[in-house]
Image (cartoon, rainbow, N blue to C red):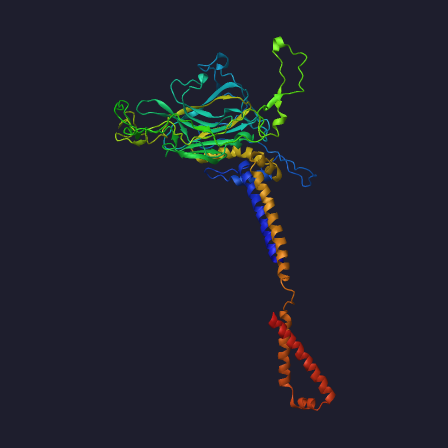
Length: 601
């Protein structure tokens, strides 16, 4: 029983630890997801380990003897990321200027003059609560204003045989109420003028976070050119299945990445974890290719086309005894007025204690009447006032007569126009081959300020993008992780964001305790109950084995005893013989008692 209790106790403790670690680990994976390469040969884990131990990036060493209290956070030296490999655009803003960027001087069309200007302010500055001194970024500074800023690529990006990788960082330092933080890749056109960058400036791809109210979006939109008409149409990727709320509310820096491959597949990543993926041919709305057939717009339903599956029976006749005027309910003729009914009393009467207010003006307010209160006499009586018979359903009621419904013999089905070949049909099997672009821009409206942008990068090499991400966002993520709260604070924070976690915490603690109490307490009671099922002495197996062994030894001794000893025994005195006989009889009686007890058991 003791072993069983120990086993149950260990099982309960193991269950509690497993559930607790699982919950906390899941939250830590959301909040502190490690850097995972999309490709390439960089060893990010080694870089993080070096950062943690301060082998390369620490300004000073942590003293061995630390005073009691919270541990000090090692200061991390920021290093400007250097773009390597094939790339078309790289901007870290660490020069502290906007020399390579163009502020729009245009106005939006079709809106009031007061808000038409793109007069929102942009600054290059450190993050307010940044953990890396010297790491600067582009900050949207104004609220409720239009912002537009753009920059030229090193050379135009042409969609050929290599993928497109676009990535940049965003930090909603003050949170986000309603506004966007997406980028536009501006199409290469002869009339592109960055000074006149507006919402209607042609773009090839729009990508990034957007939020208003409780609608959390992560856009991937591209403009597809109709090969027949030459017109452009926006194609929207399906909405991600992942919960995006945390990226907008935790006030941390997140890395947004878009990968579009020549085989028409695409991936949308946040912090290098895929949150959305699909194919340009099958996962865009509206679809890339139109239907091969459409309904003929010139086909019209014939006037005699009958779409009614059921009709009223034209041969049906209303029965002669059908009374359409019979009321639905009639008075109950069998009802009798209850004894004690007060016909002369009303349910309500004037309040005898009410007094007309002194300021009551009958010319202005009319004749004063005391307020009505329930009649005290009616409280004990079955009823007051004129008694009326209760109403009951009229058995003769049939209602308005209608002819029964029958199948329509002329039913022709639901009419649909005939199908014809779609004159606008085309089949584009390579939507990846989009319009080239040669500039990147931010054209935003926001009700929140201090949106921090950093480390824009456009390339066609996956490992090059990974290296840039690790040198920029990876270092920033490591610095933020060094200041993460303890285990308990993480659990409390997770429960605040997801209240259902409180249920998990309670069950994690309660279930093991209940198991321990049930097994321990019920085990003792069961053992005691089994022991008290009978008041008879319990068999002693060990005693029986000892008796049997003693008898066997005695038999062996008698067989091995020499004849001389037997004769000498025979010559013993009569008194000694009597004592021996008495001892043998006592031993036989004891053996008989033990044998009888064993048989009874």
